[in-house]
Picture 1 (cartoon, rainbow, N blue to C red):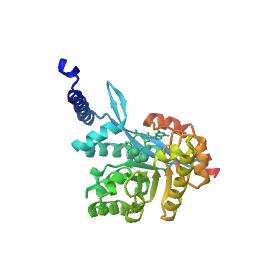
Picture 2: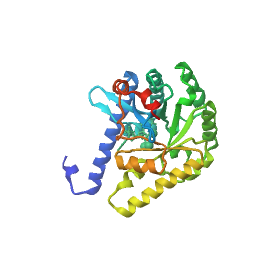
Picture 3: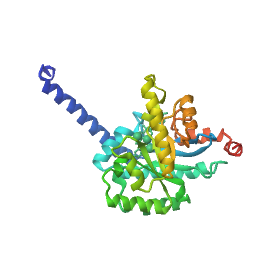
Picture 4: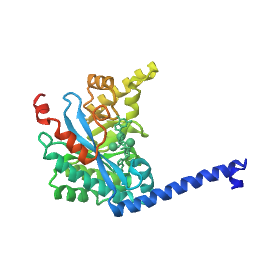
Length: 291
Ligand code: C2E
Ligand code: MG
Ligand code: MG
Ligand code: MG
């Protein structure tokens, strides 16, 4: 006890390492219990076509429903799961939940062509990925074109020929590939030419600074977003802006021709029950006919 309170900096540092080790061990335990007890579930956030306001797809986002701690966010869990290797099993549970629920959503009028975008960790890219995806899609009778595989730039960073082959196989299957958090990696632009990319998701940090109160920075962000969008379109990719929260952001994105938006302005990620209720109260057929 007395030692920990001592003025020795190294001992204070040790204590915080200990805290982190405990926290990590606790997450590891939670992951074990969650895999056994089916505590993982996909939540869904709408992706909207800016021009028409129509829902064109949903991003599946992992949550852990802990019986005592409640609904837990994915980031710390994924960090630990990538270290221990549990991410493979978690990823499969989320993917299967996402596809099963896309099948349910598809039965609602006007939503039969929507897609689901699922996040994949670099560790999930092995040679079994494409046949595995094909098997699950087939089981739920979902056409591969209705799956978007979201990868971060970390997957592409090492220009690994094995990763290339896997991405090509997934693409050949008919699934689309999206680069997530675009613009935050090491050589974002080069990935567009070297890999079979269909969709570019502009990172929310760029969207957040569009209307910032530092005028020069906001102006530069607007030029960046406009430039990324133009280049993406030239590369035959469609563009989604992430983290859209305000009407001003939407107006600007519409002006410069960004295709789609995702963010709290439209909807937060919802569990499947809430999603079905929300969707049932909107007339998607009327919306698409109004185009
Ligand atoms: P991401 O794929 O970039 O997902 C978007 C994140 O932004 C989500 O956070 C979402 O809830 C949040 N978001 C959406 N709209 C807004 C907005 O208007 N404002 C703000 N501030 N945030 C918004 P979430 O659900 O906490 O997920 C965090 C990250 O965890 C994801 O970032 C993704 O990288 C990872 N992740 C989530 N689910 C999975 C999964 O099943 N597998 C893997 N490997 N990673 C996942
Ligand atoms: Mg994502
Ligand atoms: Mg993102
Ligand atoms: Mg992210």
